[in-house]
Amino acid sequence: MKTSIAKGLFNSHPYLEYRKLVSDLLLQGKATGNEQSEDLTHYSTLNETRMNRLDKTVQITEQISQKLKSLKGDYIWLVISEGWCGDAAQLLPVVNKMALESGKIELKIVLRDENDDLMKLFLTNNSKSIPIVIVVDKVTGELLGHWGPRPKGAIELIQNYKKEFGVVDETAKTNLQLWYLHDKGVSTQEELINLMQEFDS
Image 1 (cartoon, rainbow, N blue to C red):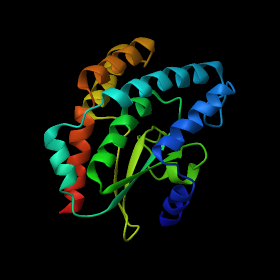
Image 2 (cartoon, one colour):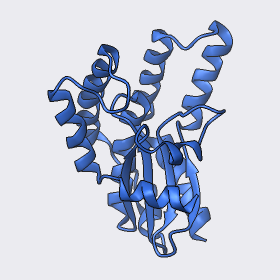
Image 3 (cartoon, rainbow, N blue to C red):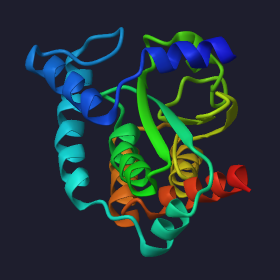
Image 4 (cartoon, rainbow, N blue to C red):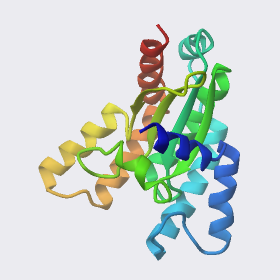
């Protein structure tokens, strides 16, 4: 496990570098990842717009800001992502703002398809769902835990939809985006800070 995480860190990008990587590929008409399709490029383009908006509008709540600043340890958040992933587009701007706010967390982003060994350690119901935030102690390099691929409310929304309609279709995806829009990143902030406080104590 330590080897996969070390390899992941070696292959990782800071937030702005990751954003540039996705943008540069889009200029060539490509998406990140092993598969290339019109759909994936289309989703990546949508996500680019979404992330540009969220980078400007996401706000860390006062309460969470205080908790982030009072963390005692130093941490790395290694996030498994891809440019076409809708959840990652909603969550990465929040995660980035939290890391910046804390002064204690270094954010690194790694591409799922290029880091299969790492992804296999963090499957959700046997699937390679992303994003996954892997929390590493910066001093010891020890894995503390992980979070993702979605906040609880978003997970429940998709589970309930699947139960009722048997599929996750475009309507489900639209409902999910609306959920994120109304939530404004607050659930993600609360879940991640609760996790960090557990590790920090």
